[in-house]
Structures are given as structure tokens and as C-alpha cells.
Image (cartoon, rainbow, N blue to C red; front, side):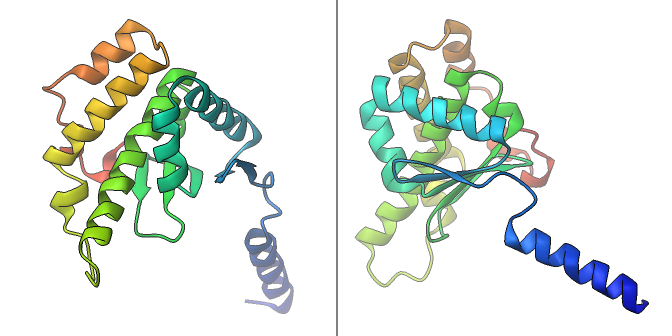
Length: 178
């Protein structure tokens, strides 16, 4: 690699690391929202919906998620400090109510994770079965259905989320598109 190419490569790395490639993160109460301007607006609007129409769910969100970040697929990174929810565009932009309910769903995963740590001081890890997999997914989906009802989501969203034969958690994380 020539000297000019090295300089360009280093400059590109600096721009990426400095965050100059996109909008600055926004904050809504205690939650930092990272992504495009339209993503930040959608998530902020969803948090407003939760705060005004489902305050108990909103409390779980603000206690269990520190960052909501635009990602290729949705997933909760509960072990990070602060816990980070990566939210895919398909879920964020499907509808405002779906975005809000999805945030509620994953906040419960984080709560299950952190509740285990509180109940088991000194634990070096949280067993997967505590916060993900079939049992926890059913709990989080029930919570999501309640959030959808609380925020007066369309019936078709409530019905879709209420399905018991959808085993979405069995799809390899890398192959998910939501």
C-alpha cells in the first residue's frame, strides 16, 4: 500500500471512529437512540407512545435498555453496559405501534437477564434458558401483546403477535430479517 493510500485509509478510519458519518445520537429520557435521522424519529415517536399509553412497559424499557441502535436485525444485547437493543428497519418502520411493541418485547428479555443477576449475586453468566429460547420468548410475546393492546394497535398486529405456532426464535440470528 502506497503512502497516499495509507493516509486515505487512516483518514477513513478516523471519520468512522469519530462518528462523522451519520447524525448524532439523540436521547429520549434515559435512552440513547442511534441511527439515521428517520430511524431516530421513528424510535423517539415509539417511545412517546409507550410513555403515554403504556407507562408500565415504558418503565421497563427505560430501566432495561440504555441504547436503541439501528441494525441489520433486531436483538437484545442485555450483557452490555448499558444494555443495547439493535432494531432492524423492518420492525422499526413496519408501523409506529409495531416499533413500540418490539421495543417493549426486547426490554423484557433484558429484564429477565438482569433479574437473574440480581437473584444470583456473583454469577459469571446468565443461562440462555433464563432470557431467550422458547419459554422466555413466550413471556416476551405475551408482554408484547399486552403492549399492543395498551397502545391501541391495529387488531391484525395483535393477532399476528398472538400466534402460538410462530417459532421465530429458532431462526438463526444471522438469517433473521426483522
